[in-house]
Every structure is written in structure tokens, then in C-alpha cells.
Amino acid sequence: MPWIKAFISGFLATLVFHQGLFALFWMAGMTPAPPFNLSPVPPFGVPAVISLGFFGGLWGLLLWALLARLASPAFWGLMVLLGAIGPTAVAMLVVFPLKEIDVTAQTWVGGVVLNGFWGLGVAVFQTLLGARRMAAGTR
Image 1 (cartoon, rainbow, N blue to C red):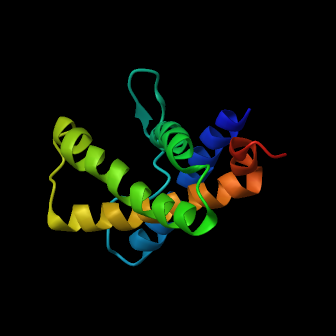
Image 2: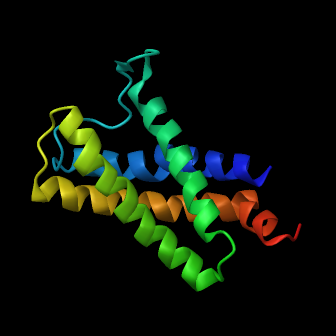
């Protein structure tokens, strides 16, 4: 059951924290694309933001597996740090080149900030949903 909560945490953090901050960036004119992209993506035609949330859920599982048992200060700090580094590196080194999206210093910095904030969101939701307590063996 805690792994379901970990997935949900990553999914929700994508919709609330990642896309919320992305919305602020868009309103400030810092990014050309709006948040909450509902364009269908192959192969199933689901909205892009739902696809992003799904992958956020998978990353949430990985972060939970690596960090859920840590003491509070280490847990929170590493959630932000690994949330910033892991998804950003995969996006910039794999996803963007496959989609023929330019990778620049700006996209790296934006990715680190967005995904670090997403990592904070994962930590918040994992704590609120009780995934950490379950990973530690307490209920």
C-alpha cells in the first residue's frame, strides 16, 4: 500500500507543485508554453499533463524507495535535491533530444528549479498520505 501512496504523491506533486510553479513562470513570461497542457500524446492520446503526472508518479516511487526511511532533515533535503537532479537530467539528456527540443542553460536551470520544487511536493504528499510512516514500519 505505501507504494501506491508514493505513486500518488509523485502524481499530485506534478499537478500541484510542478505545474503550479510552471504556471507562475508562464504568467511572468519566462516560458512560452502554458501549464497544464491538454494536448493528446501518443500512443494512447492522453493529455500531456496526465502523461507527465504518470511519470511523476513513477519518479515518486523511486524517491520513496530510496529515501522514505531517512530521518526528517535528510529526507526533505534529499527529496528536493534528487527531485531536482534526476528528472531534469533525464529530461535534458534523453527526452528533449528525442523530441528535438533545444537544450539550453535556461532549460537546465528551469528544469532544476521546477523539479526541485516537485521533489518538495513529493515529500509533502508522502508525509501527508503516510507513506513514510508505512515505509518505516509504523502505522
